[in-house]
Image (cartoon, rainbow, N blue to C red):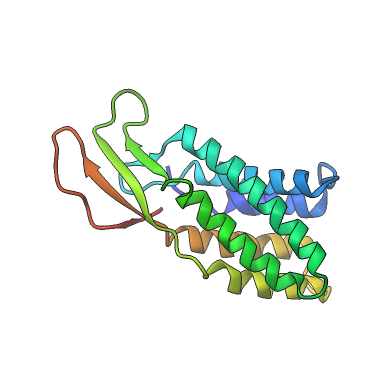
Length: 183
């Protein structure tokens, strides 16, 4: 498996264009965005290890809650809400990989794993810069929904590839690897 930007871009475009109807609430918008990212993250790999499915589900639920709170805070903030939203979304995506515990990875994905991994770093403060630019451009009425989806997919995909995992052989036991970026 490998991360594929189109797994973000195409569903984001559908979401932004309202292809299946626009979300009727902040909670639904947050849930839809979290589901898109969780589906994309399912294909992440750190060498031979991949995310543990049960933890991806929990992380997706946590991301949806954090995004809903971010949308609500941004709306309440008025014009400064763009910066508040960008920072809160940055925190939400970092939390996807790191909280309440770092995301676990394993190989093989079924049976008893012979290699285990943990996310070591999901860089905070990086996403907010790109997201702020994206949201300001959108607020100015420039890019189309498809262009915004492409830009957001690029921002999220580029950042996700900076998330690193440390793998450790379990059977036979061995030393941990240096941090491996997601692919």
